[in-house]
Length: 197
Image 1: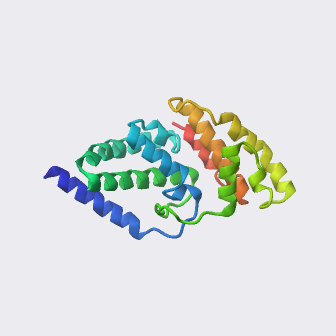
Image 2: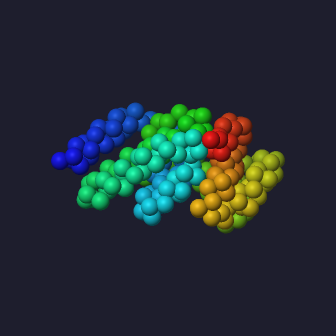
Image 3: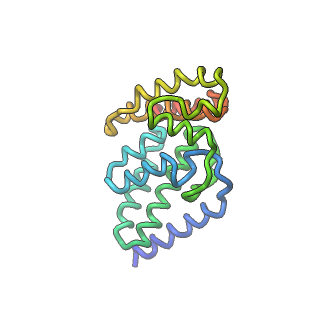
């Protein structure tokens, strides 16, 4: 009975978050994005470090509580698993966005279109060069991106259990993506709070 009550509470919280969702505003807001992907991996493996790397250190305790509850509830059947996963991912991305100093507008479903530059930036990291972005931004912008891109590549192969290294990668990743999208590269300067205690 207690489990059903908890699942009902999760459903109410999820529904409230669902109702305030707006249009997709960032790569990390989607079920297809890297933050949600790592959140799912954290739940699947039981290693919260996959999620911790996306949030400031000061929010670790809050996320851990949600993680532990979600891990318990997901064992009570497919519906509970789906609801627990959604609850955890909503909270992970809410905290991640807060760490960036950005508003949380809800977790967008799989298949939501993302900016062409974002897709190209993802591809660039995957293949190890900036060629996917060449037709989308100017030569000057491409040249300005090179240093941030090289930092992402240099930090890419981190140990997931080395949270400092993982957070350094995420910080470089976010900085690269914001500049690739054409945003002021200082817009998410607060991501440095990942390392704050």
